[in-house]
Length: 114
Image (tube, rainbow, N blue to C red; front, side, top):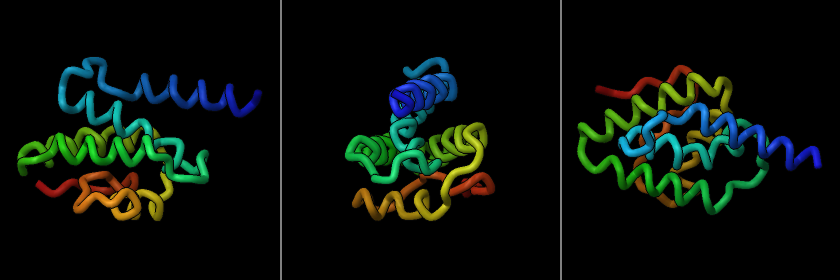
């Protein structure tokens, strides 16, 4: 029961953190990235297939350098709002999900290259 309540809390926080308009690329990226938040903050021990699908979706949204920078900055803002994330998990996310190259912020002090 505690686990269920915790998951409900996590998903309610993810919804609040996502951009209000998920029709924007930023909102879509944040919604997708939200699937990885429980893993990145250490609440889930195992990387879920849904998180890897989300990483692939974020990668698909960022096909051009301009889109990469925009999505990266968008996710960077989300990571700052989340607070502490496990940098080792964030750094290895693309590799573990078999996604070549990633724009997923790896910590609170991550800076997107312009």
